[in-house]
Image (tube, rainbow, N blue to C red; front, side, top):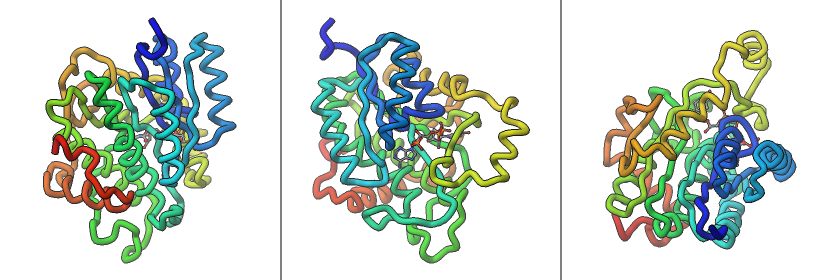
Amino acid sequence: MTDANRRAVLVTGANSGLGKALARAFARDGTRVGMLVRNEERGRAARDEILAATGNREIQLFVADLGNQREVRRAAGQILDRFERIDALINNAGTAYASRCMSPEGIERSFAVNHLGPFLLTSLLLERIKSSAPARIVNVGTKMETAIDFDDLDWTRRRYRMMQAYGQSKLGNLHFTFELARRLAGTGVTVNCVFPGIFRSNLGGSDGAQGVFWKAVDLLLGRFIPTPTRAAERVLYATRSPDLDGVTGRYLGDRCSIKAPAQALDPEANRRLWAISGRLVGFSQDPAASSA
Ligand SMILES: NC(=O)c1ccc[n+]([C@@H]2O[C@H](COP(=O)([O-])OP(=O)(O)OC[C@H]3O[C@@H](n4cnc5c(N)ncnc54)[C@H](OP(=O)(O)O)[C@@H]3O)[C@@H](O)[C@H]2O)c1
């Protein structure tokens, strides 16, 4: 089999936690793996470790801060140059910020990284994913009963709270999943969102969100919390199980659908976030317009 024909999977946030466990599992399968990371040094270390563990030499590194649209565009161009097919895209990267800060484009960073980055990356890769169909897009979400405040996406009117900003930006993953699934109906590309459960992680660690309290909790209770490898099983199921052939627009927990927050079940809210996101990344044309 030539490399061009080989099954290829792209994982974001692939140097740590869940993303690294996923990249390792796909590499073990003999899949071509694209690892998108924001820090080249951490990315290289993870890639070398996975290569040593699996012997798979078809692991490519792409570097981009998902909160920086210029970097996302550059990485998407490199991915399109190197991957003639993309059988699965796993939007896994995520983070939390202890205090309100802004992206280079002047957008609140949790929203920019956790929602807009995956929206932009997926949109830029969409034609390649469609031409690789049957293909899957899997968004890694979280489970919080919350709602996006469309009138204050940047947290200018409300007092910034880390977990609320994180939860609302991650709810964006669900709105995005449902709207994209609707737009891609009939293309052979499925889109689902997975809640991986609570597991051991460095979430927000590089962004200073893990204060002394959470570090102490981790120290005391860490060994009772599932590992990222365990959490990866849910995402691997969503990405490669034949049970889900053709299944799209679902919010999945442990191999079954789970209840989404009310706002994400409102098609109008999904369309609204889609339109806002398109404007914020500067699209003049809708990336999934042909199937909208
Ligand atoms: N852990 C849990 O209990 C839990 C529960 C529900 C959902 N999740 C979701 O699971 C996913 C993976 O989280 P994890 O727990 O495995 O955390 P993690 O170990 O911190 O991994 C997160 C990954 O995202 C990357 N990342 C963060 N900000 C980025 C940016 N601006 N641009 C590009 N990449 C960036 C990180 O890179 P660096 O290493 O450079 O920081 C890291 O590779 C996240 O979407 C999270 O919301 C986690």
